[in-house]
Image (cartoon, rainbow, N blue to C red; front, side):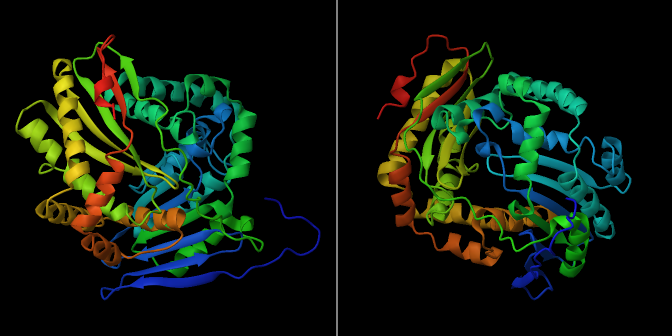
Length: 448
């Protein structure tokens, strides 16, 4: 942004805190720069690589209906060129050093990231910072990417295993921000103008809404120097970071009980689930244990009952999605259309049984071990570490060490799991189905 010629601008000193330190030399530090930009790093001395992410606290849930899909559309456009680089230069500079450059859009945030050799971190910060802060957003690129996103929507629609998840969100959350698909709709993408997208970019991509995270063979002071250079004159003023999203409970009734896409597929794709508390609820650890025991692995109840004992499905499992004010859980299965009633009946029976009786102590212990082991193994690369510290800052506004989270999981009791199961699994259910079922009656599987 150009510097004005009026009175001197307010200067705010950067504030830095050490959040964690371990015996191996690993250290987590956080700095708030002028302008409200947050920089958080995790030094991993044994690594030879580094991962950098610029996380923007904006996603599809921040869009109005006419702008449905704008966050994802913008993600595409930022790679099309800046004031300093063409689209080819953006791609080729990191390719030339064997790095990975990519981005993704979610309901509540967008991330632009790169993984490189540690010696190439200055290049990664320069390239990713450039595309996030200095995108041109030309009209011709808007028109070209419009066709690309239409193809992406068509690809999603042609893959029933993907379409059923968007269908579930739309049925559960309805015409609320969380119910809208991240990709937008064919209509909204067709009608969105370059002016609308550029305005969205200017309003939303502000330093106070961003978190820069780096993990690996990094030094916090070096990262700060690189970030200051990349963001240049945007780092100015006595601006506080944007607050975390409010924990408003929102709606607690599905918009639709049943949503169906009739399609002549060889396999039926089904999702049955409902609401959960949001990510700020302290019961999230008990909910994770419940999910792991119910459908999170090969020893889970649903996998054993549906696949191992009866061979009714190849893929079956459960998952939980956490948002600021509310969450959702679902059980997915893909099965032959002739078996859909039996599979849904078994899922519903298991949900009802656990809602009333909870889980056995051995199931809870096994689920806790699965979560704790999976978490530690998942932290073995720089990208996972970078994502973890960024999400903690952006979503919670606080850092908790891996050991603290492991202790939180270990502390979950059988009674706590039973209580969250009784609340969540006995709540209203929502079913989405993709398959050859023009006149099929699914109402008994969602009835209270």
